[in-house]
Image 1 (cartoon, one colour):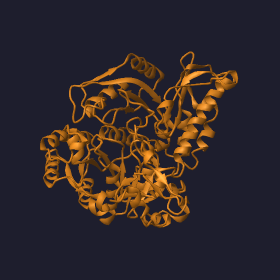
Image 2 (tube, one colour):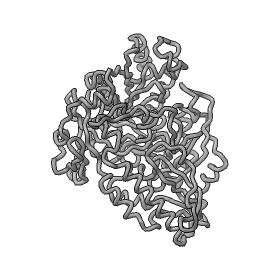
Image 3 (cartoon, helix red, strand yellow):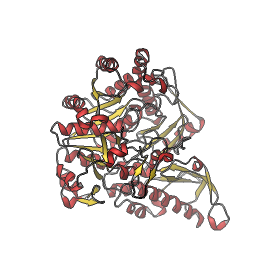
Image 4 (cartoon, rainbow, N blue to C red):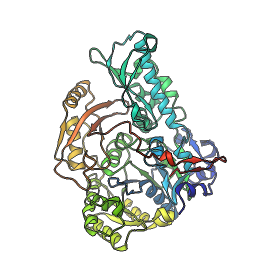
Length: 555
């Protein structure tokens, strides 16, 4: 059996100009990065901004398990299937982070015969967007420390600096560090740390900004620290907003690549959904909606994280209205949610499967709470039996959701035709899309609503520190923003060991952070970390490159 990277390497890619032509992007609107990658000029938006939007399909999933669900693979296969059915389509996906690429997951550009290419480029440095984010974030950190070293005219309390540094790799040793050691010439000693780049507020700003002017405003609003008398210090007060924005001169432009079957794919931005809002850029999604009749986008991890944030944060800010939602599930993953170990998944176990279906049922309910139709994509594996697949499909119908078997990993777009038909039907019906909560509600009420309605929690407990932060945020006037919940992806609860559909639990909020530039409040729950670590045997150990530049082991 060929690996994903082998399949990608054998692909006969079309010139990116040909891909752009399929959705009426003009040649002078392309900025080429080699033969098969391009950025789309911002001038293209001015030409099409008054055009009618296509239909927007969101792909999400059950809570992830080690068995795998295949969300990106399903997204790519679905967009190819819609193309096969005669529609002008485009995908709008996130860029992979180097952290998981070299850490736990390996590549993140789809799988099998449902991939975006050039897969190696997309998974590695791509067009440099993440480097721009990392550099801008760290430039702001450097200027902040320099301001303090040069006299601290703003009166910044070094004990209350909230702007860390970032790196797009998993490195647990950098979570907590001390900077400024070595004497007076090296700055003011203080405790700090690193987050992974995808958790940076700069990433959120890139993904939510509508243009360079909007981005500059958002960057200027970033809170970097507090003064001795408790006043919030903004990035604009350091006088480097212009310098920070110019680093995004190219990064702000959406990237265009292709699927294995030659369908256009916009890949731009990539925050994690467990520690950030988990969606690709607003600009890429809006571009795609003007150029295509159907746009398939994804949100990170399960529907309790990515989909909730897509709907309550991204759609609220961008004025987007989805037409349908696809929830990806596998028989294998459902059996794991039902209590089976990974080594036992080949067994037919109706009891475990039925128990695990409770997780899927909750996600279907959650999507319906937003007034949207749900279609379940049952991502088939060779070890699945017909009886198991039929059982899951029947249960989905009982829960009020259409379902279809998806075989896109093995068959590409052809394996997604049944799913595409169900999606077309769902997207063609009127829906009652609405947000889960009113942004004007107080912060604790918004958090309670998400915890009770989406997670199924009995309530929320705030630590003493979080309670203090809650009062401070409300006092500073930031209480009317949406909430971005940072929570484990493995469970509906904040405890990764509680699989399936747990009950009788409460959510613990241990910290609240203001992302004033992005426009939301981050609530950290449980033991969630904003700088992941590497596993015992990281994916990097299995990667190599030969003397001819041929890569192996990248998924």
